[in-house]
Length: 143
Image (cartoon, rainbow, N blue to C red; front, side):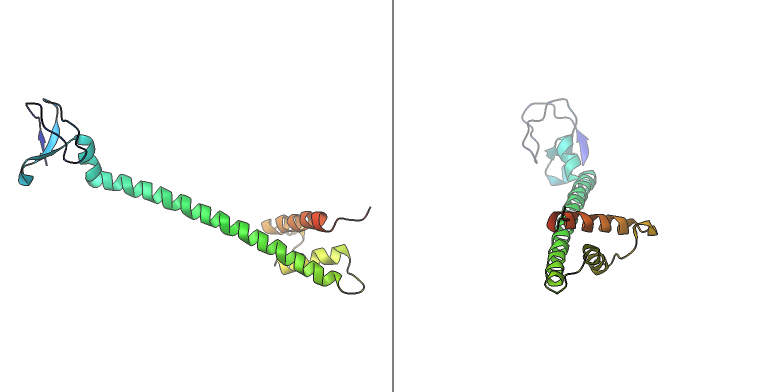
């Protein structure tokens, strides 16, 4: 491609079809029978345009991956709570029924997070809080 300035009206961009203004720089390919492109289209079709497309595609892929991860996390959280419900039903079917603390301990151990809140594990407190909140909703304490 070479820089080219059309001297008269009537030239148009091969890509977008826009009329090219006389006396303004555009790009022309002499090997392609003199086809011309406006600067914007030439950049989009060049390696610079490829790089911009790659950046947009990478950003979209990142956003898509983030959305998929968040969806999997929501599904896992729902599945975990459904598992808690099943375990509590099984435990309450026994006689004598277990204490609330026993139920909480079983749910925490089943979740793989049987650490005490003060153990320094960042997930232990969050899991304990999640189990306690769920128990308050599903199995409230008697007044």
